[in-house]
Length: 446
Image (cartoon, rainbow, N blue to C red; front, side, top):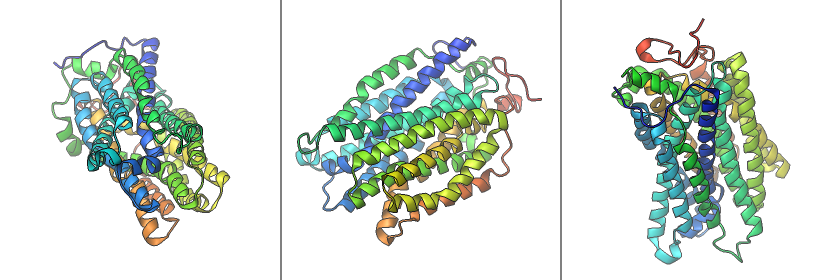
């Protein structure tokens, strides 16, 4: 029988709330860490990479940014396997410590002017470690929150994962914007390092909260029966291929849209028009807060109407609005950029249904399945989005390409998910006992 390390869920509403709070606060901290580099990419990159013009700087910045996403599938498989075999709780603290340590190290790393090419190599390595941690976090946080949800509230509860991700990103963007205004570059050339070093106290708080969190009741029930999968990675594609494809399509579209509208667009606008970086970051923060609110509201709605109506409507909105939003961002002013990011935030918040993806997999492989689907899609679509967009726009001058790219991904996701069954009203399932695995008071499907 699989051992269950540490305290386990006692089934009370208070215990579930404590677990949710610990997961969400840690998730916010983790995504703050991840956001800081993306929000300050155009400022940080010249410190570690020599470049002659703004286009070269931006390409180098987005290449380093993509490195973290390319490592996310590795983190997804590594931490997902441990989470499915040994428990969700056991790796929760580890991924947060890894992310925090890598983020603080970037803030302390000497630049190219002092240590030469070693600075370039080390910043890529540290960014890769951030990606490794983020790959594990995505699956662990999503599954941990979903498995602690009360019956009939999985959509509303799991939406906190996306909401706290958006708030963490908004916090990183907002702090970067404030530092730009408060500490002018000419007087404080290393001002950006403060945003990275501040990850340390935030990470310590998150770590202490996660240390006291409780194990998922679904995993506990599975472990006590000795029914955890001995090979979740190898069995995943063979037995749950449809879930991987559907999860990839859904998470990939959200990741592509998020990184296009909130990472590429602000940096590109600043580099090509000379607009204030702090202003662009503040509009992005507002859009991300909107996305957080939309995720919570639409997650609750999906518990009532089902996942499919909410998710498919938001994907359709992205398919229709992406090109007009790209046009507005390229040609409009501050209000246009704000409108683009608010609209994008609402659509992304609804499309990224954590509950829907978690419900695609049984308990035995839920962490690995969700982590691999989101990790692969984030690596191939999300993390490379700024680099691909910048390369195509720079080579062709086609300013609408980012919108076309997002629209095509949304249409593809709609096609993949058009036949996916509704999962909102059935309990989470365990493969070894069939379609459903009632836990902690969940009723079997009617």
